[in-house]
Length: 365
Image 1 (cartoon, helix red, strand yellow):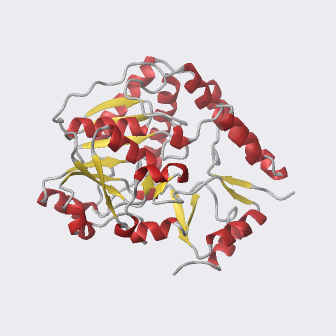
Image 2 (cartoon, one colour):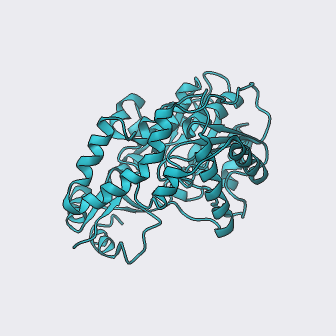
């Protein structure tokens, strides 16, 4: 029987039973905080998810109405955090080579005219930005840097520094398929005192949210198995409809709730493994012509995608109209979003061999 790979839908989630039965305590949260403080320096705050951590980072360091430079190829969670903090995004176009903005492009009039006060660096898909030049730009224009490590825990910049040790604040997401994946949860490390006081979340997660986080990997594995007979997608859609599974983009921003104890324990275990094994890119990407045709061939070969990182410059599709993204000012990001295909790095070349052969025929050089 042909083996199917259910990409982006809890694929690569190993240890589903551990996720289901791990018990955590407040002590595990304390251990996670101490680890993050030792690793990145500063005060660690544990949050419900990554977007909540980013909103707190922005609130601590900026005033309402401030402009924040953000990658023009990102997820809706980043936009949501900026808006929740009362600030405005200033979209910066990206490079096709690494999906990040470059310092030289930030000097454009349309960027500077927004009177930016800060920059969010996200190291897209685990590809490091040119941080030295970004720092020079930030210093020149008196901007604060916030590092978003959702894709890049353990990644090192070209000058040898580790991502998360440069900016005034570091944000982590422990959501589905991120560098650290416990299904939900996040953290903020304030490396320098902010200009505004913020309150650390103290309310425990809702029982329904904790249950969803526990069972998601199990459901993901079941859906992957059923994909062999073309029922995996239907089951996942049903689980989403009845709220047993929550899509990543729908995970609500909440500044009052913290991470669950068991997820803190799992996050610490994963962080310690990255510390020992070194940096790791999150996903490998390719730009193709006629993506619809490519996807049809990949499905025929047994490769299924639950979505893209990202099918729109600000993804997912269902939230795109809310963003009012300036496509004309970010033509590369707009083009890339129509052509990108990417794979999690936990797949082997052997597993993806037939997929690579299909993609090679359509590469957009």
